[in-house]
Image 1 (tube, helix red, strand yellow):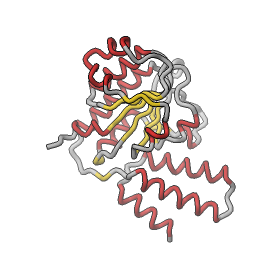
Image 2 (cartoon, helix red, strand yellow):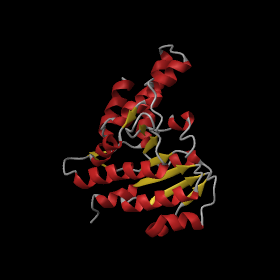
Image 3 (cartoon, rainbow, N blue to C red):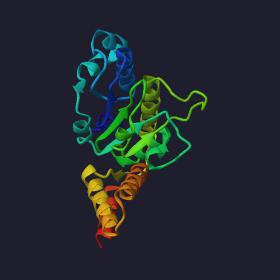
Image 4 (cartoon, rainbow, N blue to C red):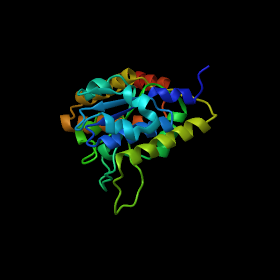
Length: 235
């Protein structure tokens, strides 16, 4: 029988253009510490070999099963919930910069029957680009000293993985079905079409749809909630 912790295998991690092999090893190690099993490396800017294996310690089996690809969109399209990460907290809180904490992400995932989740870790030097953040349903930022908030990618990853593991292992309450990517896309399409019919310009439509996407990503909605919203908008 599958336990709640077994469901952590539904959560994958994607490292976008990693620069240092040592960090790949450390991320793999942190994943194994907290029960995550699938790692994607997207367009690495370093070798993925002996150094990564050395620093992965007892997670070498996980690292040897890593998927290396150049196609970020292809990876994203396999998952229902895309979680972005950033250390750059701007005072301007537009829809692109709507964040939740690792603890809030853990709460969100613990209270649902897990669908397929992908956590994207940004580059060591510049993080995730704005275009990549727009692809994410929700963005996680770790509260830190504002004088130096940018963490090493493997340290940040370990904090996020720990909060998810802690929340999932301790939660005993009722659960909801996580919305499927297809359901979210249908809802966003209806919203986009409705705004277009009302004569809104393209920029306003893009901002509104992104804002809604972020709200949906941060809320604890069920699959049936999303289907109900679709029916309401259709009417």
